[in-house]
Length: 75
Image (cartoon, rainbow, N blue to C red; front, side):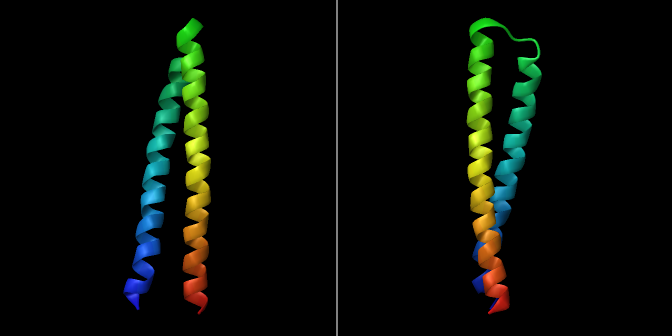
């Protein structure tokens, strides 16, 4: 029975790790944006938006694993 739950749990843990790494990247970009100018600032703003989009996608993926684990737990 534990093997039925391990895949969603492992995948959820992966999502959490990836989100944490993206949070660190976002923090780094935000710090660089504070002093950036010109083309570099535009690049950082685009990078920031890409990071946020990736985080939102991971959030949705994580939510689907949580839902799956809840369904498995109530069965």
